Each structure stands twice: as C-alpha cells, then as structure tokens.
Length: 271
Image (cartoon, rainbow, N blue to C red; front, side):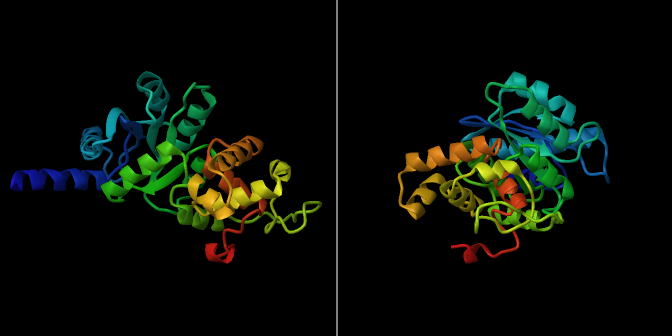
C-alpha cells in the first residue's frame, strides 16, 4: 500500500509540474504540452506526460491514446488517433497551443476534436487567444485530476460552457475598444464592440447566448425558457452558425466582445 501511495503521489507531483498531450476512450482525449521553463529536460517532460497518462487512464471512461511534446506534432497525431478531446498546453517550444489549435480548426477534419487549454494561470493572456482560435475551454495545470477528467467529459459532450465564471473573468480583463455601438436593436447590447455577426441574432437567440454564458446546459435552458429541448438545440445551432463559432465558448466570447453580455456584471443580475 505504501508503494502504491508513493507511486500515486509521484504521478500527482509530475502532473503538477507540467503540461501534456493525450487522448481518451468511451470519451477519447488528447493532451499536448511542454515542461515549465525551469526544467527543460526532455526526459523529465516525457516522464511528466507519463504521469498524466497514468492519472487519466485510471478513469474508467477515459482512454489516453496519444502524447505530443510540441504543437507541431498535434495535427498528425490527431489524424492518426482521432481523439474526442485534446488537452493542449498553451506554451510549447516550437509551436504554441494557439497555433496548434488554429491548425486543427483549419485542417478540415471530418470530426475535429474538442480542445481544452492547459495553463498555469487563469488570466494567462494566451488563453484568451486560444479560446478565440477555437478551444472549448481551459483548465489550470495544477487542477485536481478529478477536475481535469470532468473538463474532458464536459467538453466532449459540448452541452455547456466549461467553467463559465472563469471565462467571464477572462473576458472582463480584456481592454475595451473605444467605438460605441450604433444602429443596433434597442436594449440588446451592453457594450461597445463591433461585430456584424451578432446583428443577425434574433431576440430569442440573444437570450440563448446569454444563458450559454451562464453555463446552462441545453436541458437547463429549455427549463428556464419553458420550451422543448429540441427547440433549444435548434437555437444553439443557429447561434453557432450565425456567429461562425466552433463551439459555445467561442460564441460566448463573441457575445462578450459585442456587448451582448457584460462580463463585468454579476451573473445573478442578468436574470
């Protein structure tokens, strides 16, 4: 028992020190990441990825199918292993996670994987760019294993925004553009950014995107609006299409930028 406890402790310690690339089964996921600048040794990076693989593989519904030490390796590995989710470190030696995410989205894959960004700090400026590039959410490197596994499962379903409060705080820290909104529907905007895509949303679709920003699932949204689940799914699909968004998170970021939702406002004040 002591040996097993020590092994688990070592695996957690390794996980806490770095980022990785993997893939999971029932839900399949992939993680791409680099070691912290303080220890660039390739051997330790490989050992750390092994630790994360061990931790995630212990989950009954996750299967780690691939590892990558750099962003340039992600696309070929995704094509070969076809994961459902990629855990992507933002900062890697040759190609960073932002560019790797962009390339995944531009590759025209028939079933592109969801991307969860791994970062050291929740307010990392690179995280926002990765989310805008198409990542579905982000999580801290030092998060508990259960939380990382939860992130993989939630993003795989695509039914709600991962950690909506963190997304809101991240958006609130972004500097605002000076130009005011003009010529838009009265009462539909709370900010000053310009994006013509949001002008195509109907009042009901604006309600939907605001509930998405709160992190509500389709079922919870249907209950809140007293409509059918299929109706909500149709509205969500229309929102993503009109905003040219890859996922809910990207749609929510566009809503924040366009002023449909004010990230500096308390979520409880909206409803």
